Image (cartoon, rainbow, N blue to C red; front, side, top):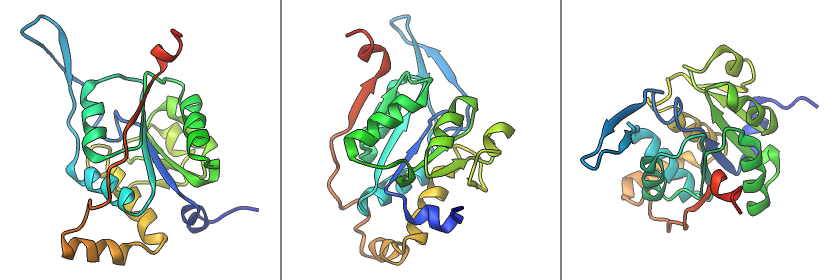
Amino acid sequence: MNLTLTDKIKKIKAVITDVDGVLTDATMNFFSTPAGKIAEVKKFCAYDGIGFILLRDFGFKTGIITGGNAPATEHRANTLGLDFLYYNYLDKLPALKDLMARCNLKAEEIAYIGDDLIDIPALRYVGLACAVNNAVPEVKSEADYITQVDGGKGAFREVAELVLKMQGFWPEALKKSEEGTIGSSPKRPLIVIDFKKQNQK
């Protein structure tokens, strides 16, 4: 049976995303520290931040699966109260399956947002495949939903709002805004899993 977009969205219990090109505009900025090391600076969108917080407020699991390992990503995930951060995962499927096992989730209950070729296996696996507007054509062809905005410009927020609205949570989200209670739900401890460290054991 072919499910409609609405049917797929109504099943979602977790929203998982890539970082570069989705939470950022895919630009990578590096600078030299006084100690002579190279550090990466990431530019995140505040709209996306509220999207993560709103999902947490309404009981959704959230997480990041990235092929990189920038400290800024972990700082952002901690600040926003995400549930999972998977580092150094160029193959996203093992991380996705690990998350599903930890949370007792089915593939159909997960939305994944990607932009590049390494995201395709995850997009094909989950219940709701989302591509950002600036994604490569091959990724867009796999998507159930393509955001109207580019990565780094509120694409995650767009998907978060879509899920919340389709599941009937948006009126309560607006009420929380009026009451000043957005983000009032307790943060859950961030679980960080590094592929390289896992495979050194």
